[in-house]
Image (cartoon, rainbow, N blue to C red; front, side):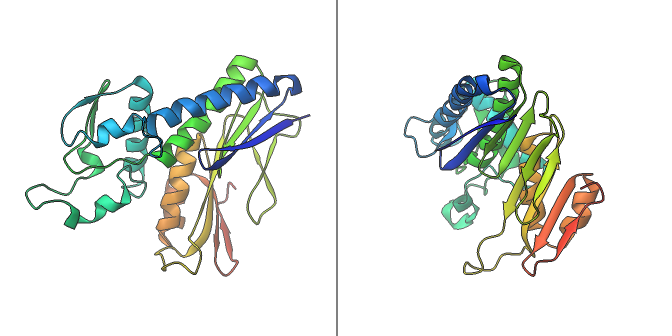
Length: 259
């Protein structure tokens, strides 16, 4: 039997499912600790977050904590894997009118990490919130499974990761508009949603994209990248050999053969 706990933090609903009921309170505490550690590093709403030091460096190298270095590496990896669709630079920096002409417009490719020293070019402003949450989901699920020797499924927002042994019948995870799907041990799932119709039209032709991958970071990055690729998402998803479900605004659904 799976025991469940839910709460809200960092602007997202957090859910933990464990296969051992007695482990639930400790699992909740472990996950809350992992989230707090990540928030302290990169939550832009916190004045004491470490990411502010990087954003204020303006071209100077900055020594960061091991956790900050790991999260930045994850964000840059996601950017490379999605050709910049998942971008660690804050969206407002895309406006080159904000950067004096003597400075080139910064790109995620300009960000360098050498051990625990980060170099971000002049004008770069980092926002790694979403990739950090996905990374935290992976980290939290693995920590609970390892420390408490039980199966765990951890969700932050629309990203979920599993670790440890599965419950009887596997992890049955709800997919928007499609009932449940089974996640095998150690896999993750993420769903990306298009903005409401009332907002300015986006390039995407999909209403939602759900991706199952080996880890939550890749599941999140791939779902966002596919959503932005429009009709080209189908070919891209198949090239990546991912399990995916794509639904358009007319209710038509495409699933990969391995879904």
